Every structure is written in structure tokens, then in C-alpha cells.
Length: 261
Image 1 (spheres, rainbow, N blue to C red):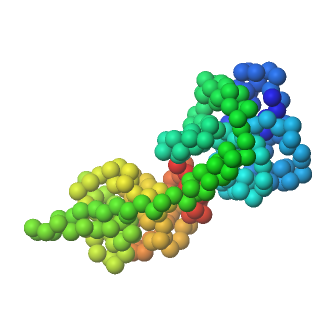
Image 2: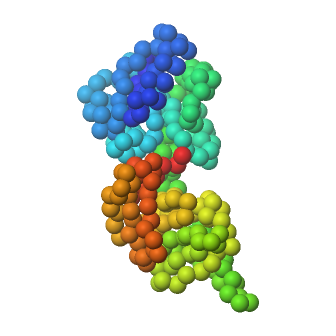
Image 3: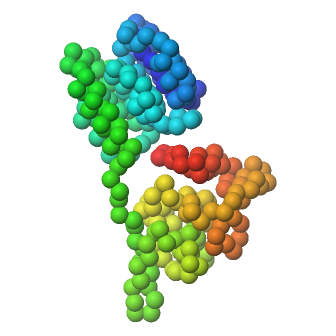
């Protein structure tokens, strides 16, 4: 079996390669590609008629691997590997091509390869078209309603929509939401509860004290010990500090590359 691997993390690539060969020593790794650009160049310059299957991570260093398969006509079965939520796994399982959730176990790969072998004869262009339709629907999911948070003022319940909120913060064990219009409200939820309800495309958990909205960010500045400070509008009472461990994720998030882990 001839296989192409698309993965931008060296450790993950090595683990996947070693696991595949340990499962079946007749497997031949044709190419190891680390980015959307590398994969597009490779597929444009190589004959894939002898390739049996592709293992591809979704989130690569320069974009989503979906871009590879949308821009280049590749008639190959693909097993996606990712850390995305299970709703996506269920969607892709409908077409007979597997979708492995990281961290990937050897048993998962064995099952995926067996599934591929069992359905290989039935793999045809109609199924390829279904895959592309699923990819497009995954990239453009139906819009979900914006979460609304309730606050209480005297004997009134006041709904506050998430799109009106610039940032959440916790002070003295109380949680407050600062709106773009500079009105502040106490929210009877924890930051952890709030974070679960927010869109990861629009909000980022900066640290234990703050959740910040993308459109409220004015700028970020390099800070001591490889951290970042973020200036918000409306301004916060103290600097919003992004820890060294979160700096890479924060930069990706600002570019619109959301880490679903």
C-alpha cells in the first residue's frame, strides 16, 4: 500500500509514519508533506495513479488542508486526522472515509485501514463528489445563534448579546462583561461557563482573568519573558497579558486560524 502523509508537526508525522509501518511493513510512504503549499506543489508535479490513500491533518501551518483538495483534482481516498469536535467526525463518517481524532491510537489507524480495504472496490467518483460537498459544508457551517447572557438590575432581567461584549473579566470572584458602548454588567456565570458558550472565532481566553473579543483588540505588544500585552477598546483596568504558552495560539487566532483543541 502506497501512502502520502500531510502533517506539519514533526513529532506527529514521525509517530504516524512509525505506527503505519508497524501495523503493515509493506506500507510505502511516498511523500511526507508539511504544508498546504508543499502538498499543492507535490500533487501538481507528481503522478498519483499508484497512490492508494492519503492521511492528512486538517490544520496546517499555512492554512487548512481542505484548500489542497479543493484546488487540485485528486481522486484519492483521504483519512483526515485532527483534534476537532465530534460533530465533524460524525459528518465525515457518513461517506466511508474515516476521520481520526488526535491523539491517534494504533487501533484507530488499524480500523481506518481495514475500513478502507473493505470499501476500496466501491470507491468511485460519486463518493469523491460527496467528500467535496462535505468539505464545503464543514468550511461553511450554518450560522448558529449568538449566545445571550442575562444580567439582573434591580427587579429587571437584562439580556446582553455576545456581539455587544468587548471583554469579560473576573474581579473579587465576580464576573463582569464590558460592552463596546462602555457599559458594564455583572454576569452570574463563571468565566469557564461563559467560555464554553462563546464562539472561538470571536473570543479568546487570554488568561485566568480575561476573555477578550477580537473586534475589541487595538494592538498587542511584546512583553517581558516572551509574553504579550493586549490593549483593548474599551480599555481594561490592568494590562491583559497573554502567557508565553498561549502566544502562538493567540497569533493564529488573530489571523483567523482557530485552534479547536
